[in-house]
Image 1 (cartoon, rainbow, N blue to C red):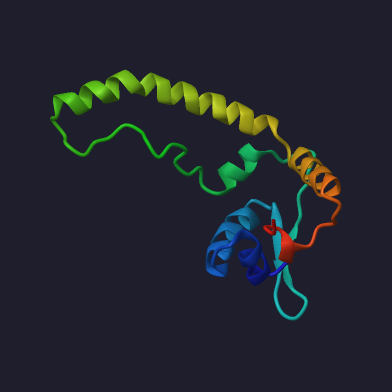
Image 2 (image 1 turned 90 degrees about the vertical axis):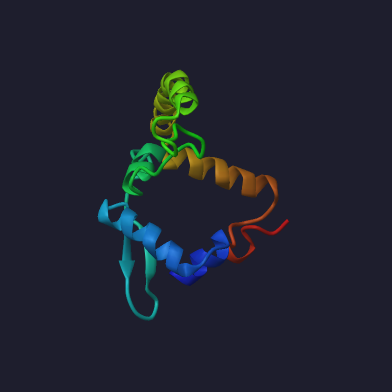
Length: 131
């Protein structure tokens, strides 16, 4: 699929898609072809690649919007909250990474296609978000 097609399906700008896909390409998970008939193609083994692999290929972005803060160095309240929550954030991130590592692209694909069959339709990227 082209970046434009993926942008429509994912309801975002194709430039965002190209940035994301570049990280995946650098890790050998997708490849791109230029020109007429080109676009992005998956180039990895769905049975071996996990959500954790994707997460890492995208640069391991921050998982939690809420986290330890350092907005006010020297603030004793901020320091106390950070100290109290550090272990909880570390535990939650470790659990999430374990779960990411247990979910393969094959499992996601199987679930997606089963859902499409339950709805009585094939996969049409233009209709991916249709109700």
